[in-house]
Image 1 (tube, rainbow, N blue to C red):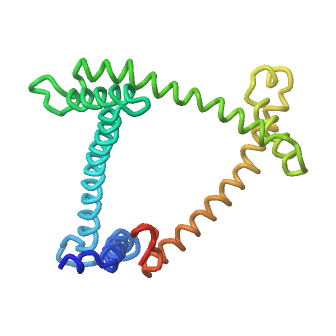
Image 2: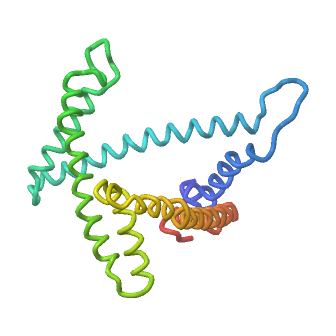
Image 3: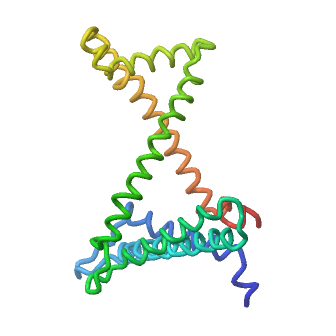
Length: 224
């Protein structure tokens, strides 16, 4: 029985079934004069609710994994183990304070939860995003080096876009704003549409391979 449950055909069949359940309602409608519920659309709605439940449980599993990883780090006194203590304490306190039990004073309006969210999580998130600016600047410097014609075009377009958003240049050279807007509306829009179309075609190809059972990257690393 255990060998039967481990067969690779089972997850492939489940993937095909639930993919079709989400796809068919967009193309076919069940017509009836009896005013009955469309069975396919109802099955699709139930499958979507199952997905939400699976996502909720995956978050729960992620918390358990986090506790296990940092718990082992603290237990073994590995490098940076004191930071793991901070993670564990913060995770446990935040989780308990945010439990939806308003009758005992818990929930998102709990003072402890509010304090941690406003004075710990929000500033830390802002700090992480602020550090990204330095990486973007470094990447822009490497990308904007005019080694060839293509790089020169990127450099000029990037400088014009920066100038079109800087009040110093838009006030002294109003034409820069017009050029920047044209770059945003025409070349940028055309490139975005090309990327979107290419991504959509790739998604269709991936969906077809999945429905045919040939795409197995999500199964044991793609093995048979």
